[in-house]
Length: 149
Figure 1 (cartoon, rainbow, N blue to C red):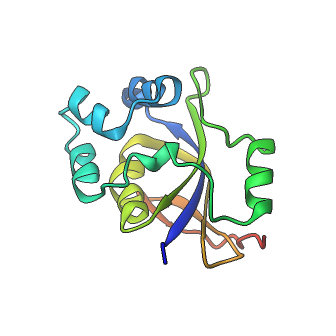
Figure 2 (cartoon, rainbow, N blue to C red):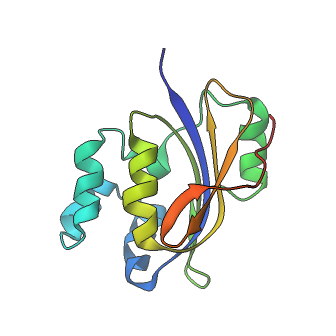
């Protein structure tokens, strides 16, 4: 059995990473491509080296999540987008999680994000999501109650 994970994300990006996230949101660039384009960010290389599924963030097709999760995702603004004015990066994706989420939370988000507005995860085997937040430069499980789907 696969271990699918759904991720919804709305985060404000640090200025130096705006061009990278723009390329991903507007042109479909992958972490692998960005690693080649921006070799100075070794944490990108570490992320793709550890995870063959890394490129499913933010582009993984929605599957193996509760129907309500998928239906509310687009209505609530989780379509893949980057707003140049607010630097808000929003997306939803789904991927087989074999360490991808942990590394995205430990390697990528703490380095590129100024603020987490919404970070929600649901696992294939669950009907309740979990929320995460940025605290002192780390992504941690939030005290906010997850939603039942």
